[in-house]
Every structure is written in C-alpha cells, then in structure tokens.
Length: 297
Image (cartoon, rainbow, N blue to C red; front, side):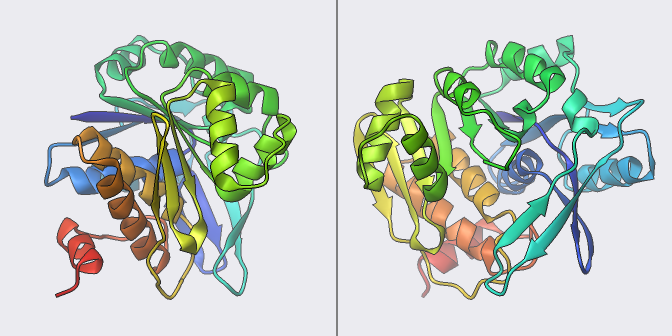
C-alpha cells in the first residue's frame, strides 16, 4: 500500500530548538511508522533549500524511513524555518515566512507516476499559496486515485474561493471545527451546528467524506451521508503540534485497510491524543501502544 504526501517540509523553531515539521511530512512520517507493521509506504513530494538546514532536513527525513526520491532542491529559496509559540495550554501559533523552498515545487514526470501508483494522495492548503507549487499540485491531483485535502488555515496564506475549488476535486476533506465554521460562514451557510455545517459543505463542494476534528473533544466523520462521532480521549497535553497530522495519518491508515468508519475514527482520535500528550510532532508510538491506550487491560 502506497501513500504520497505533497507540500511543506520545514523546521519548527521552538524556544528549545528546531524540530522536523510540516503537516504533509508529519502525516508521511506517521503513516510510515504504522506501515512498518502493515506494508504502508510513505513518500513526500516537496522542496528544500540548497543549504545546511536542507541537508540536515534530508538526513532526518531519511532517518524516519520516508521516501525522499521526490524531495527537490531549490537553487534560490531557503529551507523553510517556522517560529512556533506555545501558550499555557500547549496550543501552537506559527510565524511562517514567504517565500521559501516548498513554494517552488516543480512538476516532474516521476512525481506524476508516483501519485498515479499511490492508493492515496494527501496534501494541504498551505502548499497552494504560491503559483509554482499550486500549478504542480493541480497536475498531480488529476492523476490521484483517492485525494485527501488537509485544510490548514494560516492567515494570510489562503484564498477561500481557491479552497472551495480544491474541495470540489477531492474525496475527503479534513479540517477542524474553527475552520469549518469560518469557511461555512464565508460560503453563506445559515447554520450554527457542526452537523448542519458539515452537510452544508458536503453539498456545496460535492465531497463524499468530511472529517472535522474537535480538539480534546474528539472528531466527527461524515461518510456518504452518515455521521460517525467519537468524543475523544482525555490526556494531559504537552503540546498540540502535529496531533492533527497524526490523527489524519491514523484515519488514512485505517480507511485504506477497509476498517469501519467508527473504528477508523476511534483509532485516529487515540493516536492524536497520544501525540498531544508528548512533545514534538512525530513521537514514536507503536500500534500496540495505541491498542493499549484505547483498551487498557
């Protein structure tokens, strides 16, 4: 089973030091860690700078066993560095520089082939902020079998009309509750509940699957007209960086293995909670540990 992710690879710069990051890369790393037991392979299509940060980024991605064959090198843009601030609850805010290397992802024949061969293609909204990477993404979407759109609203780096156009092309949209309410209001929704706005967005975009994360309160999965809910797992939050990415990795892993929607949602919520309870975006977490967390003896 193959999954290809597209978009930003970067350094999350915390007060305590730099950590490998970027939502699509975090998803690829999580899928690879799960796939060690189940034959899932993760690849990343992105771009780094021709600099020391880029060399170290490449080394660490390889250390996570993610395929880097399609990680390009920009001759004129630096490797991305994002300032991360955590509030007293562990919630993160980000200072993202534009432009950087992953804004310049070029279209390659090898990437078109990799996406066509993949069981799923995962990408986020941040990688659409620049025309170069956006143009490449549009061509790759055309080749994908199962397209997963991870909405990450980072002001000022999104266009709501473009977001809607992208949603109309995909099979699954993942976003959080704040993003759902913000976009639904912009698109003219008269509704005030999560359930109603999910149905509104599904009809507007014609997307068959929508997943909305609710922070510590779990998530809702809309699949072919039916809603599935999980109320979440209680943990002591260390930081929220990467928890949503691991949630998406877990959901994708289960759905591609033909799990029932409720089982997939429960697994994804457990994985997201375990990540939030630890520092960093991609802590090592085994399948057995997830199982023990969901069903303690």
